[in-house]
Length: 221
Figure 1 (tube, rainbow, N blue to C red):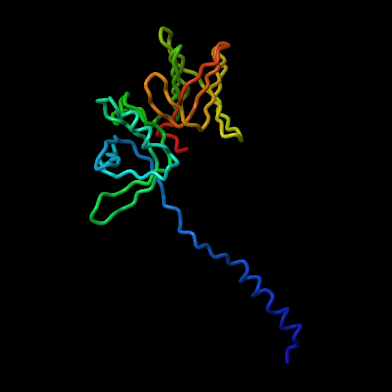
Figure 2: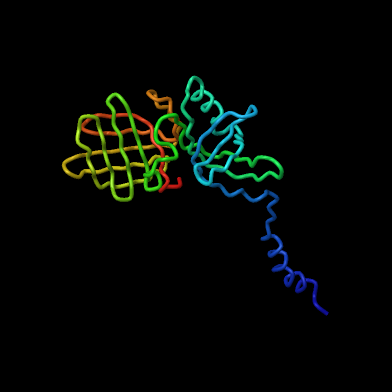
């Protein structure tokens, strides 16, 4: 006959194993994908036609991205198609249009090449600003600084991620000190009205120039 104390000790591993099993009633998160395309208004909502496969999707927004308000502001008085670079989850509907639940808006704009941008998939980041105008394009091969009336500068760079969420791209090549800082925050281009998901600050030749930025197709942040 097994003593009560010995029986209790023999059952302890069983109880410990039961306690280690944690049941999660939350449904698994839907996988997301990044799409580019154009947005139009249809039946009181927003319709998205993707560049990839020409899928037509009804856009859903939980209120976190602000896309409906931004899209409405850009479409008012404009005859240009509204280009969108977005991330979300595809929801398949039987007998109805598929839906796309938004989780991130990278870019909204009525100017630019849109779906015909052949450089997008090679681009890690693009940042632009005005007064004075400047543009920085970053790929895995280097950094390209462009300014009106000045020769373009192609430079190597060093990337640094900061705990605050900021990312720094810097270079000191060719006697040129350049620091580009981007941060995850909605940014409105004052000249074009375009909306992007990163603010940008370029420090160059003793100047601090501000603008907006977005990650390209070669980066999935």
